[in-house]
Image (cartoon, rainbow, N blue to C red; front, side):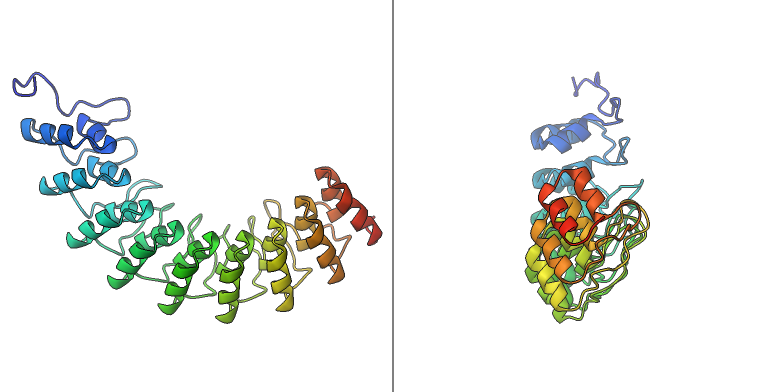
Length: 315
């Protein structure tokens, strides 16, 4: 039917995806090849999410189709569109597809292409995903290490620290990543991210590199390093931060559930952390932004912590 021209090879479904789009995202290289050979296909058509068949193939990790579309003039450096768009290289880096990343770099993909408002650079995406070899390749191609954090997006170092990717953190620091880079409005510094994830080795490394211990919590949902560790119940991290003179009574974030370290630990049910913070003179009756540690523990049903706080003078 393709040969007789009785099929519209660029017909679109409700999501504006064509037969080539479906073949690309499903990894059906024989179908994609047939469409390209027998029909006059619009290779760079976009769906409702601004994804081309090429981008769909990359997101699925389908190298054979990526190669096929490259042979048919797929656009390697199409800009990231929409709020959450990705360039081809950003998508490959995010997915951890080293073979596709290398192929795109051979085709002169732009390493430092501008991301969409809620996207990240290729390096930020690879760092967050823990894709060490891709991070190495991008750095070899002069990826910018210190692209600033934006709303919902972290610097490469912050992203790697949040997920506990120690080798990537080490590599980025070697490449002069800013250890105290400012967090986005609702984000966290590298140390705050590592502490919140309970990643003690990353915390140790960042402290060695002079990470700011008492950086303030960002306005919306932020945490100091100690607040983040306490909230997660990461006792060893809490102990290490206190050794470095973390401020036990630092002010909480103003919006979206800001908590002091004691309030965070009490609400989360982390008794050992609560006991340690009380030993370090945490203010037991601090109201914070809305409720005391005792009120939070009662609401969460943590009886042992309720008793502990009352013994410490909570009212």
